[in-house]
Length: 332
Image (cartoon, rainbow, N blue to C red; front, top):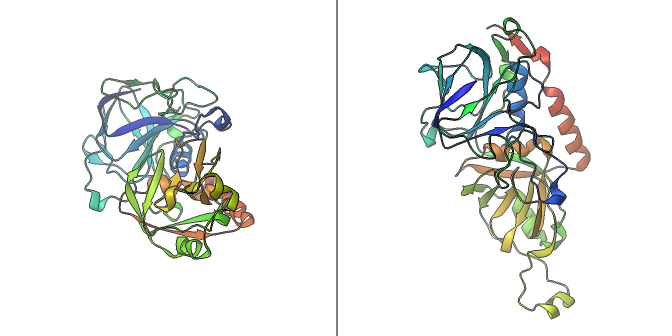
């Protein structure tokens, strides 16, 4: 069990989300960086989809109310135990009364923006629609449907393994992700690439896009060149002579879709993003790379690289196989 001493910028309970409810307007939610959450859970002996804490930037401070096995993965936000720096991507035993904190990090030195705290037994909150994740737009799930605040007490479940088997596990360094920009994000072109000029499509892939300060779990906006659209069909011009060519009939939008509102500033839809849109989508980020928008910070540079559907499937298969128990080592 933990007690929140300081809540930080935003800390929420997240697992791998609640797929299957987009038709009801309910976003996926879940970890913005699912890879880091999965690894954290394996380090502490949980199932990979167990709930942990997603920590944005800095300021979180927790008091341990009992002995626990924890791990911190994701971006290095400078985690400290009793004011001593602790190892990332490693399982650690903490005692009752210990204080875990994520102090202030200068923006210029920060790589990535979200860390994940997992604990043996998982965070114990109610399961709603098959998930423990916090749905911030809907104010439900997680810990009372909101970010943590001072005084909250976070219950922890029962560990699946004895603590003696969990101490000092770590993920091989070669398998740890890098959070440095410039990011390269792989995408599948479409579904509305036919609405853009060939020059705009080429520009989308050749341009270095800068992450805007409008970046959140809802989505990430990019700053760069303007897009041009092909001429609209005569029937559309007749019905609406001054219509915006980026507008489309409202339709479903997947996590990772990149929409172009008004021909400016691509927006990559995040895990808490809308389930439908009325803007043209030039491309869709492949599942294995969605975590990169979850770790992108303002002013980061990003390039997009086109891949085919078959290649995207193989990348996802390889990414899932990348995490294997034999790569979580004991000691050292």
